Length: 345
Ligand SMILES: *Cc1c(COP(=O)(O)O)cnc(C)c1O
Image (cartoon, rainbow, N blue to C red; front, side):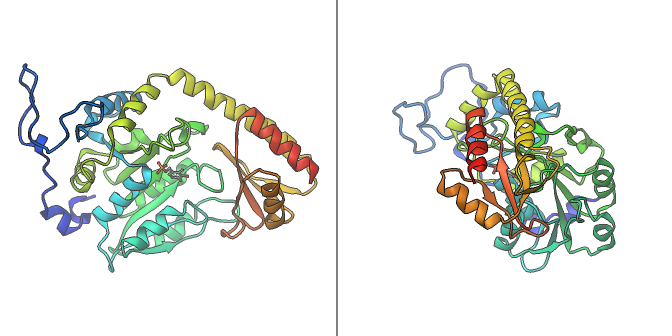
């Protein structure tokens, strides 16, 4: 696929922001005196602008993910990367994206913010992809297909063959949002970025890595696409504190793996407790750190839980999710409180 021809002309023709520190190569041995960026000279750990390359963090992340340094882009959360993708490829008031509801709400918000039409191809009743419907659509205006696997809010991973067929068959950029991949029994599709030049994988430090408050999203793709995303990215989108914290956390991979195992075990226990409740009608298969649970009356159960101090997400108004609550797996204590409260209803 010719990626350049998919990129917006204004993005191709512009030059990116050049910061003070881009003006020279820092290969001097002596310590430099920085009088170039109008920063405060008083050292408090954060008085300097972040280095836009994030080379330390990129090294660690690319090593863990088994990609090249030039195949990674960081965002202020995945949400920013998703927005960058739309802005690189979609001309406002002209181009379109495809999403598969019920899915993550930000794709639609980002499209609309950018004046881009969102073509919705709903999942089938068993939450699988309507592959033929998607491949049937053919228009050079449809630039990006957003796939979320494991999918939020349904919790299931999509069939690997379906994902592969779409990556190969769709005539535009395919984004696979792997926000929940660390909880999944399926493997990440990161290794496919070298064989498919239209593929972007996004992952996040917000879920399994416990850094939702710090905002760090990661995009993985071939060098060309990463180049364009970096070109329009705000230069200081990843702040110094977040980068430092991420390096800390990535140093404790064993702790994170242990936490993931705990969550998965808690998920099993929670399922067995939920199954015993007579107002629970269906617990959907989950490959993530949450359960989509169909109850007799989602609005009622949501309010009852809230009054007793337990907040879940009511997804009842989403297509195919009538009377469904989305419940995040918490700590053992959280989950015990949830079960105790549900038993009281
Ligand atoms: C939580 C979530 C994200 C994460 O977004 P961040 O901006 O990285 O916090 C991305 N995609 C999906 C589907 C999610 O559920």
